[in-house]
Image (cartoon, rainbow, N blue to C red):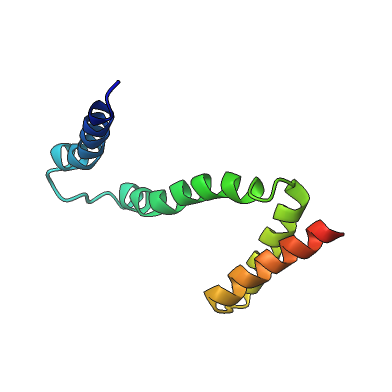
Amino acid sequence: MSIAIYIFVMAGVTYLIRMLPFTFFRRKITSKFLLSFLHYIPYAVLSAMTMPAILYSTGDIFTAAAGTIAALIMAYFELPLIVVALGASLTAFLTGLF
């Protein structure tokens, strides 16, 4: 298949995903349950996409888990993002050495 066909299909799917909510929800959504449900969808999708990548990024589940736990602990103490990223990477690296 031509690369142009792939690009057109991808553009069509992307357009449909963005267009369909505007088509179906023309009025303001007043349901508190639906609003809270829609509020948490981006976080749930982001978590579902990143967790497998995190756990299989190092090739060893134990080093990845150690880095993830270190990142969660540092994030809990509200350290800067660069410190969390470097600390998690260093933890995964050092765990892999032992």
